[in-house]
Image (cartoon, rainbow, N blue to C red; front, side, top):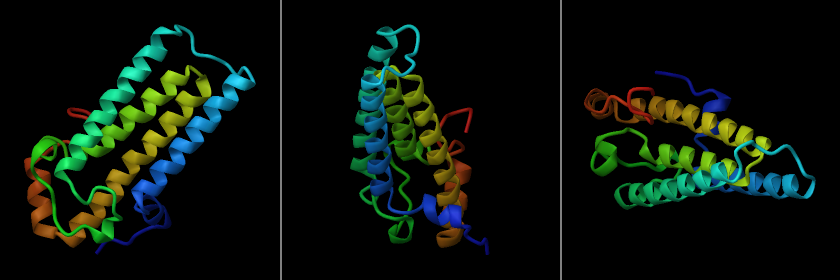
Length: 161
């Protein structure tokens, strides 16, 4: 049986709360960046527009995932089954893909180097969350999750991760 590290426990803590904290940080840093004239990304306004579109697509994907996975915003311990339909038939963690898209979209929409760096950090944490969640699900649903992992090869990004 695999042990949970402190990092695993932090990553699996109430995803809705963690996501809200990340967004508040991103918006606060973005506003501070405008007020204090922090370093902007070249190619603005094109990247700003791309960021807004990426955020909107990520939000749409998030809503689609929530329609299939009714327990998407509860802590991992409360999950009572594995969702294998809809987008979850293609990716094991499509809701994390939506969060990556929204984080990066928000970072680009602000057009600041610091918001893109924050978006990359937060996105990396969601990737680590997927790994911690899989460790938990392999223990809670050993046979079912093993089959699911065989059927659905990709966690978040097809052909990459």
